[in-house]
Image (cartoon, rainbow, N blue to C red):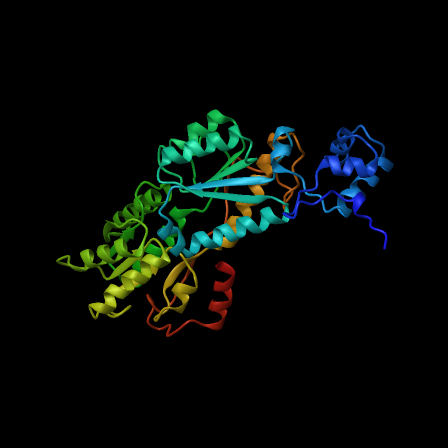
Length: 378
């Protein structure tokens, strides 16, 4: 039997990577010609380009990200750094769904998502500098926007593609996409007021985050406008803090008749405390969450929540990130579905309130329509 292995790159037994030099030898051209062909650059004839690309496919060649970075080509990677405890991130349904939407769009465009968890904002900024300095990423997505956020001027100074998830305002010259947390708060407070609640507590997440501050400010402003007694209890994101904060507000001389939680995990922790103290929901205390997920819909009673698709939020952020990367590289932007130009600051995913039995006792359980809509929201 005649062997043809001489035409193939020699293996090492460890899956030797096919290189541009291997393709060049097979095609009978220089490595420079192969580089021009596979990177879509002028300098080779159409026939030679097609022959080289055919050989590359036959050998199952994949481009080296390191080599692409050295050549100044896109490395097809978007970075995201998270300065949050891993336990909190792992338990947060909204964030997981957001990342799923982000990854879906990036993957369709042949981009990877590189994530890193750090222990401080300073470490996050250092990571951005190192990633861009080493050409590890084409752009970064910044989440958990803070008031007076030191990451904004640091990224502005780097002058590299970056997208801020959060707003409005506080994102400097960087582009941003955001959900209107003030509107979400208005929907919640007006709903509770319409049911006759005059004492409402809010168990709030991390105070440094801009969206938490916006919710806090709107909550207190609406309380004054509507003549309500509004109380805020800081808890930080996570079940343990929410449980402690719920116990605190229940010890007040005049406890609230409704409690609003900043996440579904926090709402479930608060509901557990109410159940342990034999406080009925909603007869004793009504419960509302800013996040809607299977956790809130599957609770008994189902929990009234702000419905906003975290998956779609991630998709929108990914599309905008790719636009920013293309603009920085001088590539024409892909027209949007509406044909309108991309805005520096874009409000996306209008919040809606899904009213359920945790605030309205006439709703005994989750309806089929609510479950179907909830699956889209998650």
